Length: 285
Image: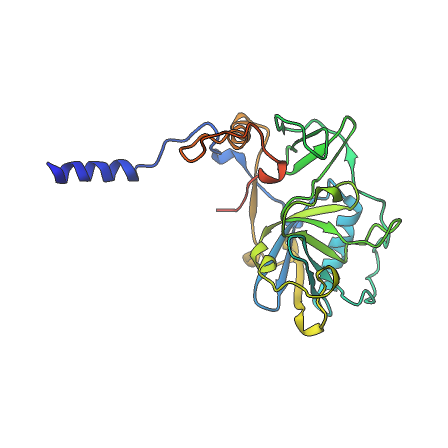
């Protein structure tokens, strides 16, 4: 009898739970276009894949595509700054490498966009915006009555720039590796999100120079190549999917993150930071 009870208990523990209201269905996963995926290969053999956001910063993203197709990042570029709890930054550390033809050296300040109806919104106001939510195509958003923007969350990618009126060409990029510095919102163009390989950047040694810059060339992590997935051979292209947000299952997913109620959480928070509930992205099956 004991053996039967133990076997029954084991079977119960290993039986998958039935799908919940917040679980994605097959049709909820949408392919990211190949020309929105930028693949960086680093000298240490690791890979970083960035999903680009042309709808948020069209001129900056157009520049980035020109740079990739010109193989601009393939020589003389590196990850040259890693600042603890802030950013990893890459490009030309000398800032002297000529840009290829077709680059807009100083694009318009694509820091905010005209507001559209978000697919889902968080239930509480955002500390840095009147509201926060999600676009229909799987991006986090913050906004006010007339505008919206991509927030500075972990793994989001921005364009490094000098003091205004500089807006940055897109040749120098950074990603957030620490607590979300939301004060940067509406001050810098956000052009994408790292969807694979964050560990290749977050595990790099921190720079010991001012603002986390490496003091010597030997400390930098060279970039071997950068290619749009659409320009890679079909057999070697990475494929990713984002979770669609304009459906009741994603709305339930948001509510679950605002009110965690499993056995571990004894006090639901009643809300969530947009940067703690980024829309899921996964490799395509």
